[in-house]
Image (cartoon, rainbow, N blue to C red; front, top):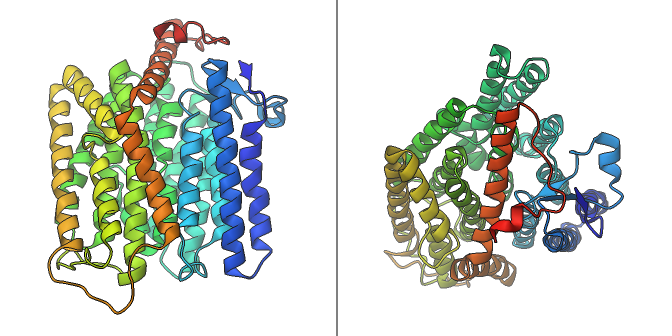
Length: 482
């Protein structure tokens, strides 16, 4: 395992933690917002440095030089590979645009310090491969939204029951896994518990109601930051994919495709904008799990590309919806609001980002969606057909929401309702990534394919030998595919 030239990982994790204390020390919401923005920018810089440094090594995995955390908690506590390396700057960008797009009218209610702590937890999660470390970080990640629900005076019962059950299954599954023989009945029960925990955390049907409850009662910014990075998919890749037999992977794929189709249908009939967005996200995020559990190079490559696409596109759509709500309040999709005349740029951003989530041609998700469909049809033809059905229904749902929000009766006001420059910059930055990734997809596809081939190779080697797969410090075998 090679070392990064600079301890980027530790810097990216420590900066938000120190910054949270710095932000919490001020009582002025405006000052707190400015400090949080600068800290998020510095964190994004560290994650971009980590990714650039990692690419220069041409290795499958690497860790920080003089890694203090790994010395204390083990070699898997803080390490990145070709799966997690791009997820770190993606997560940091997500936090930056959400914090940066928070307007003055909302800064008094937005928890900047808690958001920075949440960012540090997420970056630690994406940098961790130790099973117990992942379970601990997944648990810690649940605390900030739970505290916000309590602070807003909303019921936490639904969220607490689902997340508590997820944590219990994670702990029970890992405990059984470490005390059982590989291939034994206890090991199969452990894998079943881990699979169930992943499905709950991912919001799969029928354990998805915590997600709709969170979007209804928490601030939209907090809900976006908790669900959009798809920590459940990351847990599936680290905890289930390397050790699960084909039956477990097929179970996840089946539940995920049912969730994708069901959520697409629910998005079509929603009469409230937040619930529409929640189901749109849930449908597209479930397709990522479908690709992951196909366990083929093409399917896994498509899943990784769709993963990036969903984070970028639906974060942009969520921020646009957040900007609209800050001006017009929560909107019903039962009426036509005619908002295009008063906020044309937000209308364009909403349509672009929403269509990008379903793999519209020319956007970052187009090639990934094609790969996902191709792999699904080649492996399970019925699943491939259902992937297309889900995408088609999501497209209809997007256009239905767009027409109800931005067309119809004129909505004239005495004051400007156009996007302010922080909102414009945030969504424009995501839109540039969406269109740029669609016009020049070669790097992302090659990177995803390399990661998919190596992950599947390690999984196959572990099943054949019954031991951990070999390491490739120089990454030579891996990069022979170029």
